[in-house]
Length: 139
Image (cartoon, rainbow, N blue to C red; front, top):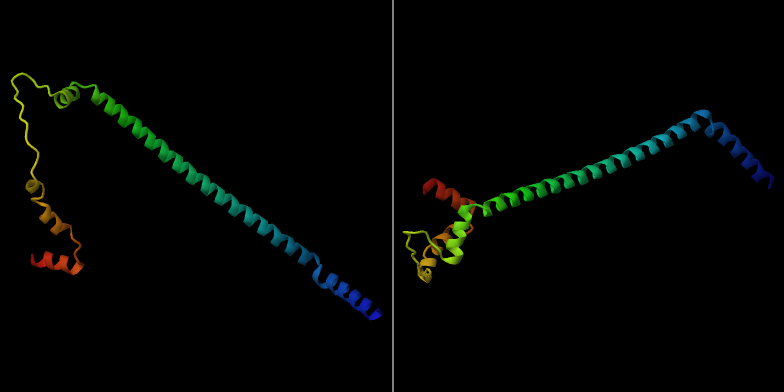
């Protein structure tokens, strides 16, 4: 028992003498303060970045809404013009001006609709890079 008490006293003595010095305590305090400061700086930076992203998003939404309002005002002004009213009278009610004759064309036939589909399919096919270069160089 005395041996254990003696070892504990030695341990306490060496701990006070070697580890609990003013220099070690101040270094530990500086380390802790540095860690706390770093954590707070990172937290504040992250929060500021998130708020900045939110502000950008809201600004973009605001600009989009302003553009929509301007577009709707433009459309409203267009719908109030005589030109639009004349076009709609011709289209919806079949009206025409004096001296005009109305020509009613039949619907396009199936052969007319599909006339250029083969050419469109030929150009819309996926081609390799080599095929494109050969076509470019040699026609």
